[in-house]
Length: 296
Image (cartoon, rainbow, N blue to C red):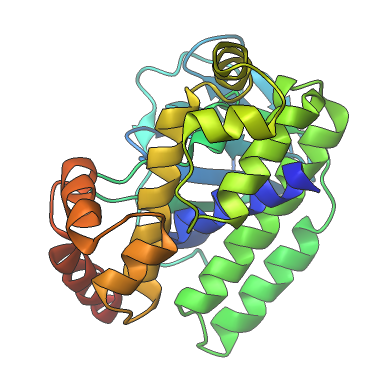
């Protein structure tokens, strides 16, 4: 359960970004490149056969039901056949979905696109990128929900977030069940992540976490860094500020209250750390988030 909670917290942290979901229908010879994403996303193959073109490594065949997870924004491409990534046309964002029609290859593309100063949750950043999850169920369900909401004119932030969360959570859980990723086999580290993620108001220190895990600080730091890809102090900082960003975006709580909920002694301590991470004070971040929401 600690691992599931960590995954859920990581996906929830993405909601401060802009959620987008779009369908593609392509035929004949085609190819698209995806570059410059700061965030996490996916491609769900609804019909046909295509190829994932990673920036490094060989092309991977994709079939109906497969999901490609882009855990932390790796450059990649999709194409009708194996070919070099360089030279593919960049994908066009923000245009209307294609009209229903027969196509050789059909897929959903969804992502949380983070803004300036925001970073993917350390749990996701530590995973391979990209990840191919073979034939994950529920792809038809997600597509049907998208069509239904679009037909009713109801595609709003809450709907996009629900579709994104459902797909990311289901695909990631399926992958974790079938892989030997290090974090899934170190119960003491997953328990520490669970403690951090479920009690962000606690003023954790690395020493306290290592003591709770029953390890020396040096051993705990080494095993945590190996499992998550970041030292525990970095994870703590990133998680606290990510949680603060969500509270700024989703609530009207005063900064002093948010500071207490994220483990900071004062609002000034939170504001200084937030400014270093996001390049702007919390108030400006909240206004920017509100302005972005009203434009979408």
